[in-house]
Amino acid sequence: MIFIDRKFFLVLLSGFIIVSASCKKARHIEPEPIVESNVLFNEFAEPLVLSQPGTKLLLDLDKDGKNDLAIRLTVLPENLMTTYFYFAEPLNGNVQLVASGLLDAYAFPSNAEIYDIIPASNSMRWSGSNGILLEKYVYQSDIQRIGMFNGSRKLYLGVRIKNGQNFHYGWVEVRHDEQLNNDRIVISGTGLYKLSERAIKAGAV
Image (tube, rainbow, N blue to C red; front, side):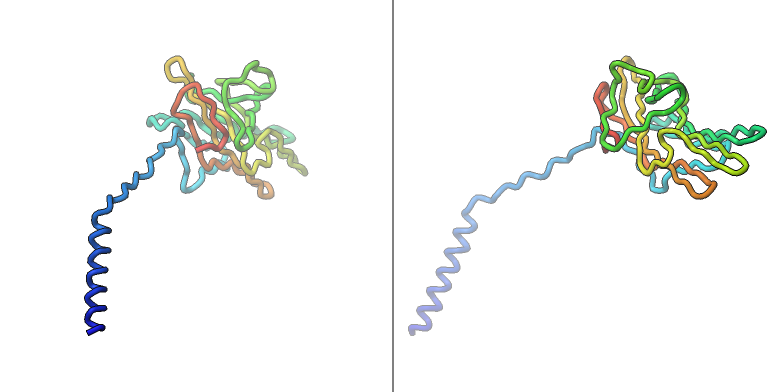
């Protein structure tokens, strides 16, 4: 009889717990907000590689279906040496890149801020002209390389695109691979800020 009373008590207790739990207000869990990046990011599954003379890589930075920038390789043979020019070429009047010196492209380290340059100087300015990433001089018994992207493992070209009266700022990741006499310029990705007149950090996605 004692055993039955205990069993009956346990049944009543479990029923009370179930009813109590069902009466409690359900806890509402807010879904995690979906954060959309403000950067138009191009990440290439297979990095783009420039290594052959006369070839070029075409980049659509703002993803509008029109190419904005070309990365090119031109060879100039002379009597005593051959010169290889690896350079970035804006493809329309709305595209500019950060230049240094007379013809060189400026190299930004990771997380450096890319924005308007005030005051502009010969060492750092916006330009709509071609910017040389790397120059290679091949002599009979020697090879010399110069340029801000020479030996780069991961540096960034600063770019901006004019839309109306405003600029969108961005970057192109550039790597220089040197293997004996063979040089390659490798483009792994690009980024462009969707919001105009805002600074972007090199490599930011």
